[in-house]
Length: 113
Ligand code: DGP
Image (cartoon, rainbow, N blue to C red):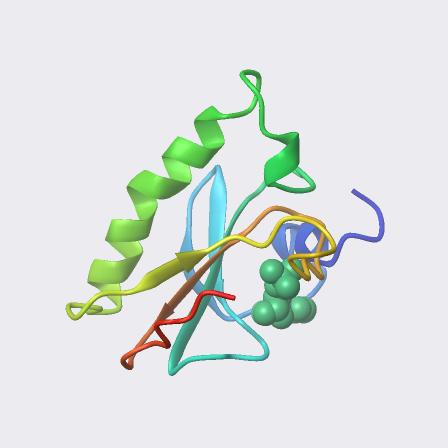
């Protein structure tokens, strides 16, 4: 999608540091990490946000959740990790291409909001 930075990263016109890639999804290091390990996992297809998930596109979400443990294993996140999805303005979603944050590498805050 034009003007979507994550679409540009997926197609390779913007650079990123990749952790995992296959034909359906891409995982990259976050540019502004909020934890010692901060990864973004996104579908290659443009879906704006969790609010746009329905029966027609939900398979990609379950697929992402099968690959998050693969990524965690690759990064040796043996002590656990947090998965975060921000949806919409109140959640401060800044990039309108659905993605899941993996946060790890320290004992994370017990507060969620
Ligand atoms: P969110 O607020 O949930 O939409 O998270 C967007 C995240 O994307 C935020 O943590 C910063 C990160 N980010 C923004 N632009 C870029 C970029 O060009 N490259 C990478 N790797 N991360 C980006």
